[in-house]
Image 1 (cartoon, rainbow, N blue to C red):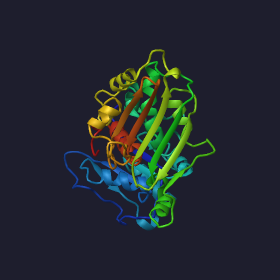
Image 2: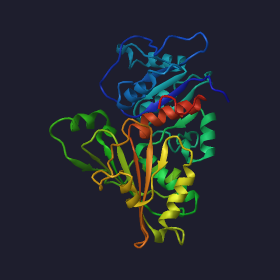
Image 3: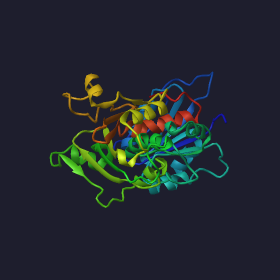
Image 4: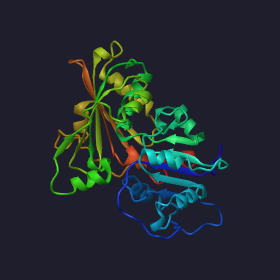
Length: 354
């Protein structure tokens, strides 16, 4: 179906910055040759909203409309903008996203909703916004009017494990662990204020209840059907992320080697615009100059991009392999993915603005 519909993206973080009180703004003069998609960013001052706006405001195929600053939280104003615009980006926590999604009028069958909070990620009535999962997943996103944007940590975990489950290398039900570190921007305004001040921890692990909100989508879309033990951490850098998944060969299809794992990932992501499988093993990675000081996998290398890099570090003699995903927690892990899904849903080249 060709979309000329309204689109809502819902993101989960917010900050205190504001924009002009003009009711409408356009990145370029209106063309008489084609109608632009109108985009309304509700909560555009938040961490994700700011990045989405930055990615969209220079595009000639879009027109950004904004509520007056003093009415940015007014319900009637927001409802009006949602149903007027072709694309509405809601930068809100889960409960507010659920409420905002309900404001699409009953007779408005044009509106596509992309929710970047966790509210709908495992809802059967929504499509998961990870187009690289499969050809079928990408096709469903071209037709869907309800798309749930993936979380940042799950993007890395699922990106590493789903192709291996599909290939029969990791059996369904395998109990895994995932260890990950993110820039502090992932915590939104509060954590950013803490880490940009003088009194903060150099590193912080969290999620010790083992009930992190990302676990359901990790189990669902990896097709493992089992929640991993998840150990998230943040440190003193703004943007970026590395996600690690260690595997014993004993857990895998008999006879599996590091080369098999690398080949399966390479085949799955062949031709991808944003996901790259890097050279196999530590030696090749060092030779390619991809380790800082010849030793460190730096987490912020892909900041401000929608890219994700996948690494396979095997030790066949020890019967073990470490998988790693590197991405921008605010890029492929949030605003970049939202824009990618927007493009796909509207029938626009997916790399536009990215």
